[in-house]
Length: 384
Image: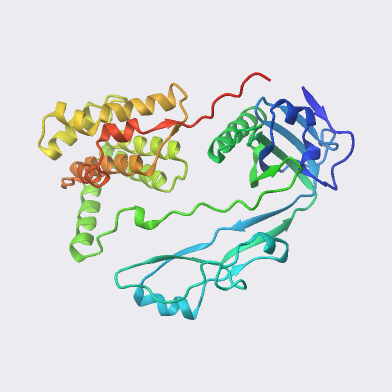
């Protein structure tokens, strides 16, 4: 049922004014996760002023023409400090800009209430390193008058704390539905997302995701390491045209996978990279197993059992064909990346044991890594 507000929302007092109270009550929501998109839609006879709200089940979508004010943390620059660069860090400390209106909730260092936590001091032990965040800036932004869609979903319910990843998943699903039925301009530009409580107050500012470089492989920058890269590039260039095009496309998929923050989408992109590289006949995994068997000098049955290629393929099917929303951790992503590296190295005449080494570092089998995934869904709420 479409709900239309009683008055213009051009001077918005609270985001709760955009949501039917009965919808919040029906979901027993004590807090909401909210995501706002810009809709570049010029004023016309269907301009949502007053706002119009549509019930999408576990998501409420409100189109409104208004002026929005919000806060966000701009993407900072992440650097790595070592003992040899520590003097520069002390001389030019990271800049953290926080406007007056959020100072109250920013924690202060225990030993110096006037400073922010993380201000560099002391020294770094030899051989150590530390992440340094530069130019962290909290920004207060006010939009021009425009059209927006405000998506909200129950986060905390009575007696049950919500999970951020699950709430975001529901909002992305709803945004996809709007895009499919109304076109991309219905969810054209994501502006911000935040949790709001039952009084309409925000619980803080959503920060960008930081990744720890120490969690990933260290590049070999020696002359021999760089020479190996040069040799592989030359061998890719010398492949027959069709194989070269598949290999180059697979490398672009690998790059996309490495930079994908959502675990499920990263897994799919890694698998597409493998499929593009080594499965020219469609969905038959036999060529992947055959290449790994040749690379490791083991029987194909043993390779499939140890490296669980068939089970990785089944995970891909669970996601794509059965709609399972799985929680994929960094250990499994590091492993499927290593499988790609081994297959790629064999395809260009090189030698790699990355998959085996990755399993040894994790202390788990490939089957254990796959079995460790869980469904990324909250239990369905009981009858209301």
